[in-house]
Length: 493
Image 1 (cartoon, one colour):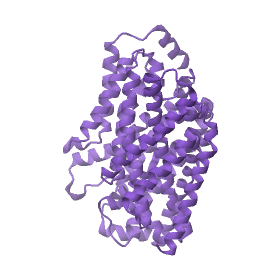
Image 2 (tube, one colour):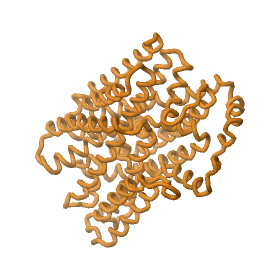
Image 3 (cartoon, rainbow, N blue to C red):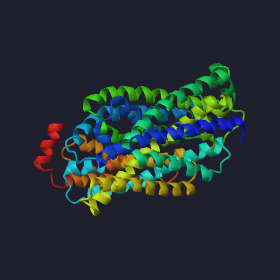
Image 4 (cartoon, rainbow, N blue to C red):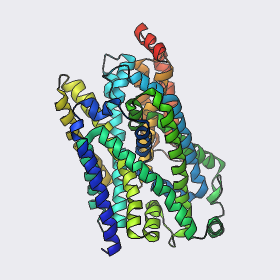
């Protein structure tokens, strides 16, 4: 390796060591399951906001979205617009009410706990089914993070892709294993700050390097006449294809309502009174970060001399930083990709672990298990889930955006309508919740395999619609909720 590469590697190693130290600091503070999975509900507004947004965006913020902007130009902004709208509505209509509901009982630690408590489901079918879908989609999600890490390490360093995958998985597992939720949230806070500054600095410097906005426009307009159009009909696309593309991009915003790793932050915030301030912090972060991500891709198209194709388009941020900045500065900026990857993978790993430990191990096998036993069962489960995700990463296609899209759509369709209606419709029943989760999840998995015309529509759209319909039909077809459930709903609402 060259001296430049060694310097970047040194920055990476220092950064990774710091994350592990944070995990070790919280090791002794994770003495109960509530500590390990929810931080004993004591998160402040800054940590809640930045950890929620950092865990939300994942490696696709610095890889997938810039790659889409590199190929499609300004039309990729529809994804950003949908995500901004979804972020605001999730904080505005879900966060406070979910915090109030989950604060009603100390036993509510996971999303499955909340659903079982909300509907007083004595059959435990709601807990088991929700946990199963959480596991399926989170293994896909964690795998996307490992793939993103593999791209980063194998591009910057002369490492084989397989070694890069293993290194990424080992680092995330280490501090999640040690510190649990507190370690994850505090590392996400640090990583979210790093991501924020990196995604603003890189496009600003790149823009100056190519000569300013006018030079970018002149360079790209000749080669790509539709590059700066929000809606365009390139390559003979039909009106249906354009409609499907725009709706599919905007529909990313629907996914927010069903993401367990984001919802758990709402459950863990110190007080519902802190939600408003946290929402403002989160919105500033997400708006500027998404603008920066789109700018990286568009400016990178003008800056990089070679033309990237296929999965390689997702390396535009990496290549731009590597060629533009000195080693130490570049190392810090490239560490932002590592931050984006780890801030999401660790959260997803923890929620998947909570589903296994709380919903299967304690819920079905060891109901009387001691707190220390459950914490250690959780730590071992972190390792197990990571191994499965790593195995999938070895066999998966190397598109971060496609893996994230499937997992994001799965959660959004399975749990989004279920969560929203559970918070705002008191006639909803546990049978309706089960129907919504199953129909939404299966629709996403099935629609994902169809192609052509309307079947190119992002699977979260039909999944969300069919899930909502299933909830309403199944709830109205089953017996009304008990007076206890209705009275509690009115009190919290």
